[in-house]
Image (cartoon, rainbow, N blue to C red; front, top):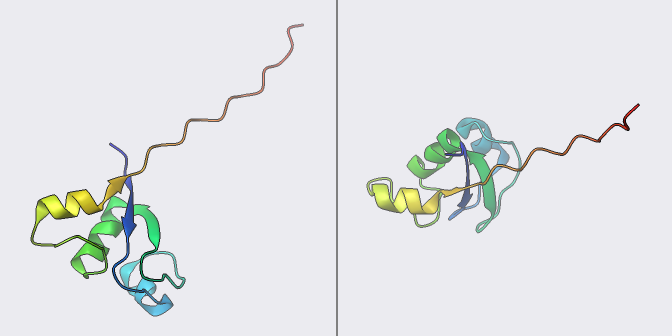
Amino acid sequence: MSDMVKITLAHPIGVHTCRQLGIEEKQYPVGAEVELHREQAHRLVSAGFVKDANPADFASVQAAMRPVKAKPAAAKPSTPAS
């Protein structure tokens, strides 16, 4: 399971709030899709910032935190045979 998830914000988040929540410090508008570590996303759920996630409803939280697939490793350049 990936440790990274994607969430959609239900409310805007400013720089000061980002600092308090421990996420990248910038302005996030309503509806922004944000990729975060699962633990960070849970902080936003608990604070009420994640669209369609009710902290008291485990199923809604799981549905709102969409797993991010790991990017495949870049292929190493092949070296010519000597």
